[in-house]
Length: 83
Image (tube, rainbow, N blue to C red; front, side, top):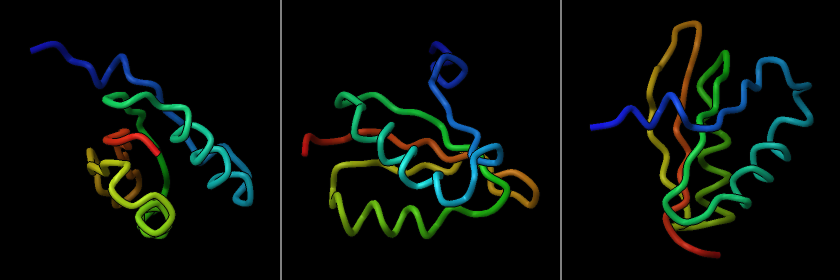
């Protein structure tokens, strides 16, 4: 099985100003084709983002924790369905 995670796009939001984080992530998410994904890297659990995605785009995105702290969280966000 190929290691697709290493080839996946990612955004390290630790380097992004806080007010720009969600807009950048939503921009990347909306640009995904069905079946594509990217990894979010953060210094805290991005659960509020997950709730926002579920509320605004129900059923469109997958959310898979790859690493869950305590210092780094990595989440794979994937497109499951079209808007």
